[in-house]
Image (tube, rainbow over all chains, first blue to last red; front, side, top):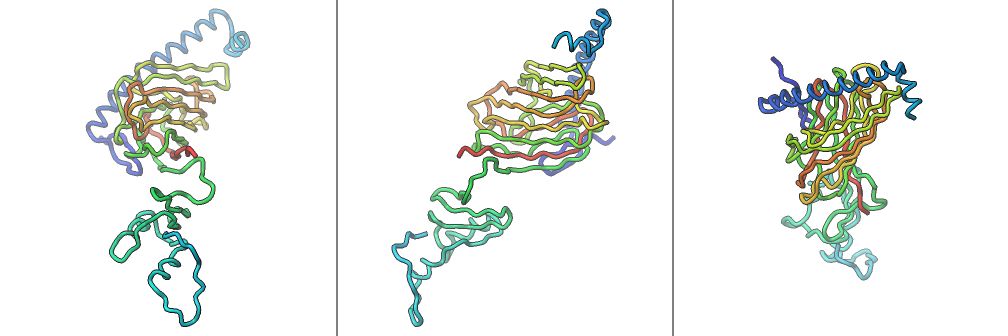
Length: 63
Length: 245
């Protein structure tokens, strides 16, 4: 399997084992952050739905 | 150049001495680059480099004069001095080579332009130590994404493994254009801070103005930046030093 590519300066190459391991660690962390962001977006929308407001109306209300 | 006290007017038949010739062997010598210029002095049969020597570099189109300790540009000193840049294509990690940030400048500007993104993803930032990104949980900061719709985002993190700059998208044109300032990165006694303004996407994939501020919370010298995504990006960056005079 081709690993992702890393560019250092002008050199573009496939990640080595250490770099790929770091990338995988990062991906796990980013996935957790993305889930948190998605949850926040969903929670915000749930509140808007409860209030019966559109996003534009909420923005007009909050300024 | 040896300081002269008179300018000789030569006449036919005059004996041209080495002293006289050395006094007129000045002007602006043309060199391929700074290495060729530096190699032209101090060797066997070559003059010792002294204050007042001029040089023109073909590779940078610069005219310089030697101050006695360094070569300085003649004329208007540019406020931004180009340091380096690179283009990248379908890269997951884009890292500057080692030694981009030095003690020459106390602040650097990095212009990052992403022209293609393999997916909708987050763009993250790390600082480099000798060309290697620092991956410790030492980054704190936040970004404000003022979206074209009402769904603007405020994203922050405390002691994370990177700074989250913005969301970027694979479709439309919200792929990320940033003007990043890096403050005193090469100073081992200070904590490197960054600020950025640019354009990208909100978490709702809306066109957004991006405002970012962050800090690497350990006082260490850093010599470059690394940009990371989960997928891949294409684009280019340019690095400039901010002159102090």
